[in-house]
Figure 1 (cartoon, one colour):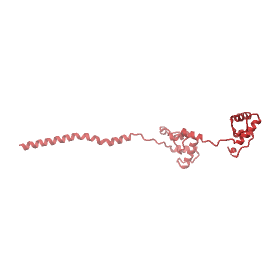
Figure 2 (figure 1 turned 180 degrees about the vertical axis):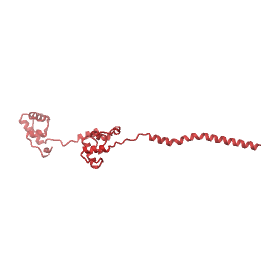
Figure 3 (figure 1 turned 90 degrees about the vertical axis):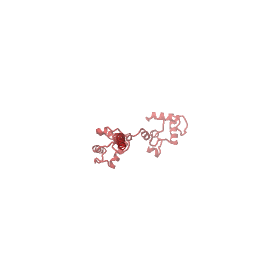
Figure 4 (figure 1 turned 60 degrees about the vertical axis):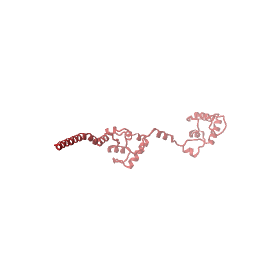
Length: 209
């Protein structure tokens, strides 16, 4: 009798343990969905939009730049694009980006209009200022030419100093008087036009400027 009661108790304990185990399993299943959730989140990240000119736009640009109208971006056409971009204050990329197409007055598609102009396709203000600083050789009169100018200005009562060969304030004032009297732009400097007007010989290098 006691053995029978013991078996019933053991069976009851086994059933209670199995039931409790089944009730705890749903909690563990929630963690198994985390990889799928992370994948879904990654898919929601916005993709970087790349601007591309279509075949029709390429052919319009080729026609404008007098290149072979193949509708393809070959090396020869890219060279022509770079030249156009340099002449129009655009970054020389050799690609038909949005800034280049707009400069060419080529109509964009609705999809292309949604893509903003890339800053890398424009010439920065620093680059522009750097180009502005790159000037050609500066015209300068030599000491002998200045002395000749001083001598001539003194003879015309436009200068009262000595023939020092230096462009001092008195000499510049005399040059201004001469320029004003001879329809030359008044600068107070012995530039090429002023020396020629004075009949003073230029050097070979000055003639090339």
